Length: 216
Image (cartoon, rainbow, N blue to C red; front, side):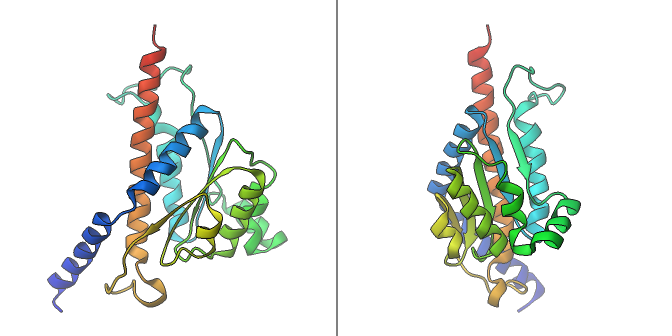
């Protein structure tokens, strides 16, 4: 296969995934996000590897983008409720400390357990759906009565069983680097960032509508 054909393979696979994307799951998690925001709850998110880095993008977008004017010259009034968003993957000090003390499988559960409540939304990202640290944190969230969302691929693993809403990225891949146990990883990671942008845009619309209604 030529270089051009291999590049087209990736894009063709991506198009097929988008055509089959589980929009209903996105709609459901958007609704859960709105409920969390309006009740003053906190969104907690976790992932591993490169996906943990993507959550820094989530953190920046969720914390700021819905609350900046369309002209990007000013923030909305401080009277407008902000969304509390915690990236459980963000602190190298906390993560390595918890690994040292409690083991890698418990890092997210230990970080989440003292704080999570029934008003919160816990978002879990695991390609296999079976990452032990993600699964244990979801178990903590379920026990606390929090809203739970998981994004996975393949058969969804244990996360699919635990989460109230589970988005399973469809399809399989023959593109280099995402076959075998890595099947569809790149497309999963692309879809994760797309989900971020969809949810942030929908939240921005929701916040703007609320601000207009509250204006004198």
